[in-house]
Image (cartoon, rainbow, N blue to C red; front, side):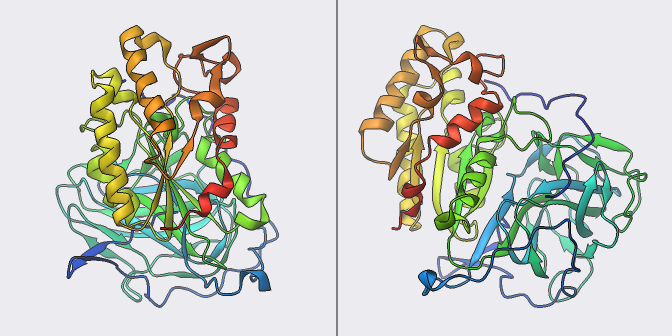
Length: 431
């Protein structure tokens, strides 16, 4: 299945408020070292705002021994885009899922071919391209610098923005791109509306007038991380367009990882767990296409995620649609499992959802892959997305209520059913 185009003519409004900083990993003595995690600095405490829910209280005695730790509260895998961001300011509207302290922002030039300088702000979204008055905070880097030079192929991590940051909070992350990266780094299927200005640095503007172009695409920003109240860790969803949320309501936060994050927040035992979405529409396990393959991006997108404890893998349908056999896909899974386990992280296997229109031969390969996922015992747990979304009277098809209309991608209700299939207790896995 080729990469799906982003939904067109999106609504410009997001709801009023009620991660991955994939810290740059340095390979020293063969180990991965998260860079900048002890960076000091940042502006003062966040001003009180009645529209921002309070962050979770300090942990109760039952959480004794679980120390505060970094948790991903939003993420989007970096890929090539055809956007023109040179000299412009991008205003990305993103939603946190778990609350915490000391927000850090990851900015990426990972697919760029030339160095660029980034500077920017974070504020509470007021809907559209506007920011709540008085909420803007300036980003700093390396202990207080207001801009940072980012070489091609690199990511950078901001200093912490001190104070508490609420769960389920819509943030406007604005970044001025000083220079031409050659190829713009971003995320093509945001299923959310963000904004780009004409040339100029307008990151400090609270109004929307300077942001003249609305796109369902994110640019430059690829992760947000907070310090959680306790060491609950991060769940990373690794997948293709079905994890990315193709077919979900634009600006509705209806992807299955969004639904999972809300389930976790509603369950006191897990309400400090972050969820990071690392889906890329059109992505494959075995070969590059829309984004580099899952095998190629595992370290960058998953294993260096702050606090990652469990990965939920849902990929392979694009490989099968492109002619790969079940045996080839399974061999790819085994490599992902081995490398994830070697990093001390658990990995769950998601069964591939129905795709009847691919034809009988491809359907047979999908069925064989799912049988292996369910019965091999090689994953730490199984999430049976297929069983949760298929039509009982025609198991090769999605249940009509769960079909967005293309026989492949779930609807909002289908994505909710997928999230409901995750056994929250299985996320406690430790290796």
